[in-house]
Image (cartoon, rainbow, N blue to C red):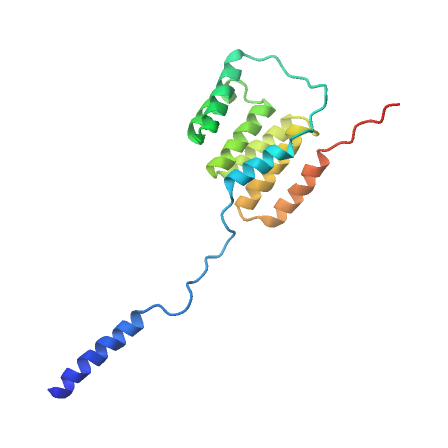
Length: 173
């Protein structure tokens, strides 16, 4: 009986030791999470200063501009769901407006919906100008979306496309 009393504490100590975690925790595989705020800054910086002095802006319904403004206001409050809802209303009225599609893609980045962000940016690119501010923002959005999805190789390819949106001005004499 005495040997059984001595064996029980030894057995309990052995069980507790087996349950104890040894070594470092296993690191999860995959890319680190994307800093969405930094991604938005990169997208907006990509288009900074690329617009020419002459821009063609279509005349459109004031309601569209109102919804776009509501979206921007919600975004300044970091209320990206409200920003998305307002932008969706604008896109309902003008579904092929490249600037609105790009704005929606930026909101998608903020919401972490990288696949939709890439889709919106590519649609904006296909409908919009192939050079200048919107073009650069389209491709930088693709870079950020692919980075967010862990596709670094194709993100690098999209980075090259951002550079192609910059066209040197014509030399005038």
